[in-house]
Amino acid sequence: MQLEPFKLERIMSEWQNIVELDLSSSGVDAARLRDFLTAGELEVLWDTKLRFVQTNGPIELRDAILQKYPGASRANVLVTNGSSEALMVLLWKLCEKGTEVVEISPTYSLVGGLARTFGATVKPVPLREDAGWRLDIEALDRTVSESTKIIYVCNPNNPTGSILSDAEMASIVAAAERCGALLIADEIYIGAELDGRKTASFWGRYDRTVVTSSVSKAHGLAGLRLGWMVGPEGLVSDVWRYHDYTTTTTTALSAEIVRMALEPEREQKLLERALKISRANFATLYQWIRQHPDLVGGEPTRIGGLAFVKVNVPLGTEALAFQLAKSCGLLVSPGAYFGAEGYVRIGYSVPHLEAGLSRLAAGLSALR
Image 1 (tube, rainbow, N blue to C red):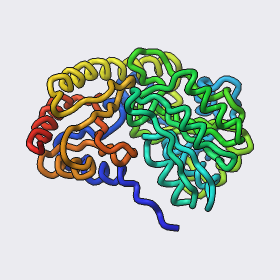
Image 2: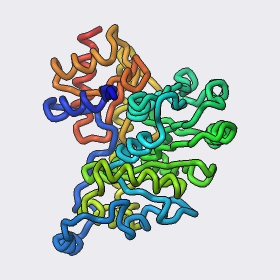
Image 3: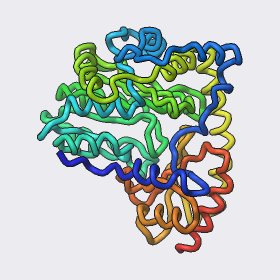
Image 4: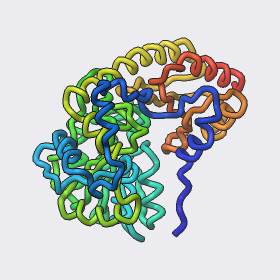
């Protein structure tokens, strides 16, 4: 098996801790424990036993996750090390040579890369750039066939920051129902919406739906590396066996901290913190875009953490990212890695945004 290079994660891993200014990430500036735990609660964590926890997730943690998915039971939930592992073990279970996967694109490249590594054929269906990143429903209906086994969608979308309408969600469910495909819905950005209105979940709309998510993006808790999948009981049980061969379990500390973070009042505090940062920085980002129409453009993002910005330079975005990292000490994520050349993903919910944008403008101007 030849593993397809995961170029996005590689460029971030190699450069994030070297450059002076990192605008490549896709979540809100990370929270600290003191942002949502009291001194007394931190004391309680000192008594946490650093042991192996239940490998599909401690019962109390799964119960906290279940609050988000009406009708689900503990047997529908598998806790993993980030949603990346949830997607990895799911695709490992489902994909083999000849498996047909339809992917709403542009999107996070993990799913396509892993599916192809396992032998699957991946067919993209576009979010239309010329229509404000709206789903091309006609292309969806043309692409999904009786051979389609999996439909993958990230909603809210990484990298564009767009959110599907109810009609678009219904069209995806209808396409899955027509061929009996499994619908994988990556919902990691639910809770990061700039207007404060939570995006509806695909959960409960179709009985062959698997939802993946984590506390990495909207909550600002990426360093805990804790995610989950929620799906049909039989499939979750099968995928759990694959999880036994990867990380086996999450950490005891992460499990306990996330259980606490998902308590309704505490979770609301975390989401409000992230929203405050994102709204302030959104204004800064789009004022900067309006000031540099010769260099950048694009549709405004609808979520905190990331924006997909069009760049007007005579250079591919992969080469551009390396050029900016090497010569300007600035890292952005190439649109080419999401299947959308001509754009860069900017992680804008960070404290150094203004300095990063200033340097990005200088770097783009020099290249023009």
